[in-house]
Length: 173
Image (cartoon, rainbow, N blue to C red; front, side):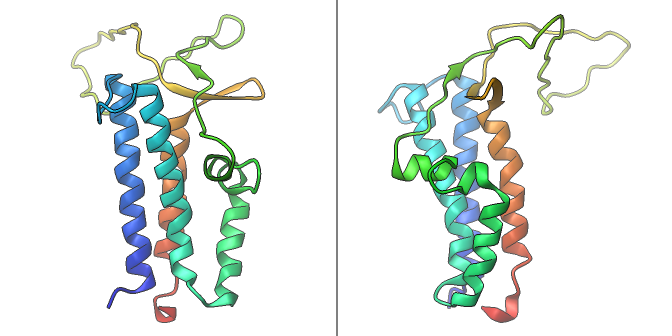
């Protein structure tokens, strides 16, 4: 029998799947499905990611009304994703697609420079450091002057959902 926690874990895997597609889409700048331009396809993957993250905790409580309070508390801890009417998931599901407002890089104020580092690259040997400055860009959300890379925002959120699911009391299943 599939337990609520098993079901929630399946939603976590789904979240990771769509996050992976978002990363690939952002990196390659090519449509994966060949059914929509890459920018539009990214919004589809984002919507699926947001809904899977929302669903994972929902699968835990099922019809046990006291447990819904734990899920609601988790959602309140992450209003940027779940707040009714303004959270990313709420907007994407009930109002309109959450689309990047800016595609590319906007330099920080003054003489500051932002250098995003690809942590998957192998370190170089020797004392020399080489920087490749190119046209690489990220999908951003522009909110109140701040630019937030969407993939980074999602990468930071997923561990919170995983922790919530994994610390759910097994004996309640």
